[in-house]
Length: 135
Image (tube, rainbow, N blue to C red):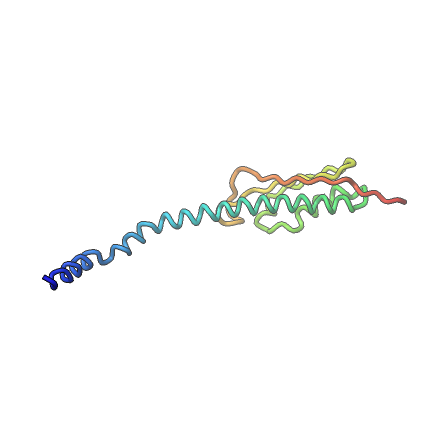
């Protein structure tokens, strides 16, 4: 009787051989899709961060520039530090009428920055009071 139990167990293990491999192969697409979705959310968050930072930089540069050059300096500063994949279709608009404001519009890339963008834009906005010389 004692010898029958190990033989039964060995037969069952022989039938289950490869089961883990099959289960892993079945789960692989789900794992890949989950990683792709998480990566896409990272790109969305990074795009929001870039838009906000670009707007802050634009306003900071615009408030320190001479009055006649504020708008151009503001727009240049907004684009200056953007990565190339986001810079291509970025829009920076600055208003310098007593209060410097910058609106930065970026598009969220789909999985790989620089290839395809989602059709919805991400906006960053910042504002600051103009600095004046005491001259």
